[in-house]
Length: 231
Image (cartoon, rainbow, N blue to C red; front, side, top):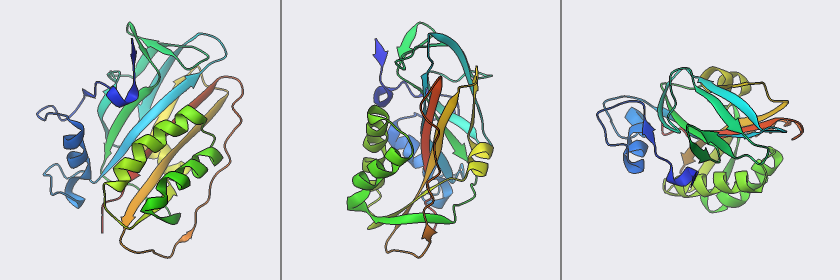
């Protein structure tokens, strides 16, 4: 049985007292900036997913370094990270007797350094904009579809007229969400989006889209994003 990302187990790491439904997780991640949740977390790194494409079946270990805390994961993220994941060239992963398409986790962050550039788009244009951006960022069709299918509904639910779209800087990503893969991939495509709902457009420097490496040799891909609920 393949365990698809949208039906993931949402294995709970912290906080243990709550029922971790998706609706409850959304509430908890929004934190003090939006909902007044006493935990006080302001940002979540939503749905980072990791795809692995070695050139031959390979045992891989994957760990995450973060300034926050991993709150959900699928498969369960153990102390020290996922070890001895058997990865196949088509992206299939075998871990602890189960088959997955990707490794999934979400983290709670107290703060992030906000980008200084971005693109303001009307909410109705999110799908087209994200498809264009993720093509430039190096995603292939099934990766792009998963990202768009996750983020367009989530951002549309904010009921804002506009969305500021940017990318977390490389320095900030390495501080808050650094993925370590062993053996080291030949090429790593990784990025985290930054989204902010807006009632009206704002003036900001144009979005800078970094060049991504070619998908040659052992390639790993990671994408995620965060919503800035602050005023």
